[in-house]
Amino acid sequence: MYRIGSIVLMLALAGSAHALAATSKDAVQMGGAKPVSEQIREVELALAGEKYSEVSLADKSAVQASLNQIRTQMGDHERVEQLSPPAQVAIFNEQEKINTILTRAHADSRLVCRREKTVGSNMTSNNCMTVAQRRKAQDAARKNMMEGNRSQLKPLD
Image (cartoon, rainbow, N blue to C red; front, side, top):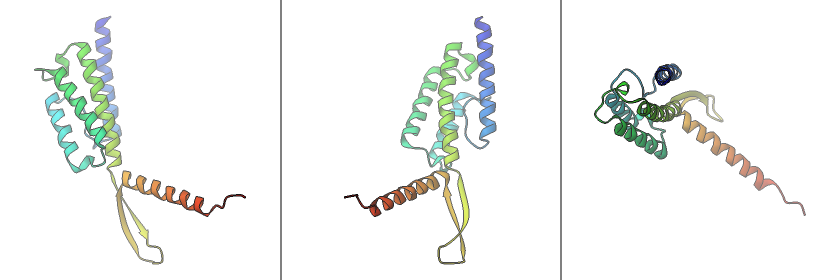
């Protein structure tokens, strides 16, 4: 029974890693054929670079905490397969946290450019923003619209 659980866990690890790789081709992911120490180094380098510029401080702290947990669980071992099944499960859970944060951050850090006409002009210009910047600008515009509508409403006497 214990052996079947281990096999199911390994298949789940392989399946989730494949599914995440298919959804975000360029995102850095944990869980693969590389040694864990190399994967940790890749994640740390990616977080320090421009690729994940939209990662919040809280998310960076969460990723770093998960990386530290993985380091502790790994000890002197190079690969996850060398560990006991409970340790493998703990590492898998930490990898999933990291993958979730990095996948979301990668999507938010993607640069999107639009050709837009300036109001009062026929000339177009390129307007490039990350997905997160565009979302923040839309939220700010929506908030300004709501505040503008409130100031124009007169109270009933």
